[in-house]
Image 1 (cartoon, one colour):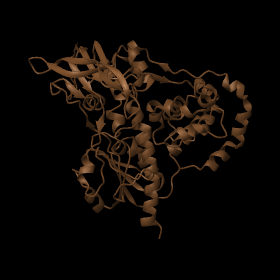
Image 2: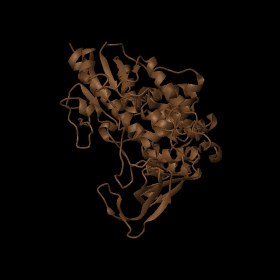
Image 3: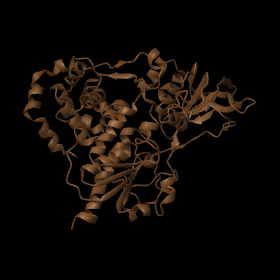
Image 4: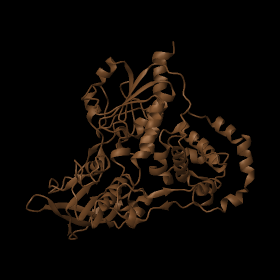
Length: 496
């Protein structure tokens, strides 16, 4: 449930919080070094797609790290959290050893705490707003590590809590897509008493959390436990169901659904349209990662295998590119390469992902751009012609534009190429709903502060609105949409 500023301030004044504030002097808190998370050794983890890289904090580490938190009067860390987690309260519960209570605090506003603790870019969000960073120029409290610790502790304890919920109101709401945005929305609507059903086109629930993020970063079992929590809250899930094909929105309306949330993501791959791109062995990152993450193509016995090669090139510099190239390494590539047209400093990938990729032996060919693919006599890619780039004047994004260096072309050997240069919104809903306003990029137009589309009963968020975003921003959209759909449905059906 949403908590007001006054509620958060009053919580800080509770006796147990005041006692903790007095227990350790501020200068002593500031002298504690930030916790380092243990990692699986690179030579071991690259032997399997299923070995998680980050191991997590020990309980002793977590309690010590939590004691760094100043429990600020004005918790600026919360301003950086798209789902408004009560960060000081969950951390202070860890400090006093009430870890299950910390997990319960997380669930007040986040449907996926164990997921967010692993894959959210905390360094650009809550941690960037931490007192230590803003005032002391020191490393932030490890909010993400602590979130993961609390969620994992709860899961492993077997004592999994269900958030506070209001009485059921019987109003049916449909969620289209079971990615982070749809799951976040579903959780909040269930708490508000709605009868929520999530429709997923694939055979497994989780959307990009399952098909897009490898298990070495986010184990499927962790996602499944978060989904099970939503089931216990009454959320229903239907797989292999494509809204727009299996059934239309009008069909769902006839079944009694009063409102819809579209979180269908950005599952349409983009390519570069350069010569030779249709050769065998050139895949989108979507296909490559889905085959491995969701269909077990890392196993030689898989019914849906994926192409392998000694030399694998991944084109791009985002987290998806890192996921792809690190997967290639785990599939046996002797030489796994990133080809990226800008410099490493401008890569959108998380610093942690780049660091892990380098530990695993990935090569980074930056300021380099593919210009042609060369196939062998069987039509399979065997080489890539690339061109060196240099950085010119800034473009509309504020980053310096890459400019080709004349005469700098050279050849790379490659048997597999994975193109990870971005994705476009899933066109199914935008194309199948009459009267829905859509941008020139194919995203659904919404009123930003409400997430409401041109069709009043249809709300949308995540990549189908943003065109590409982080898990946590998509979740933030889901929460905002739930809050505003509740207002809309209350006015329509519950106010009399």
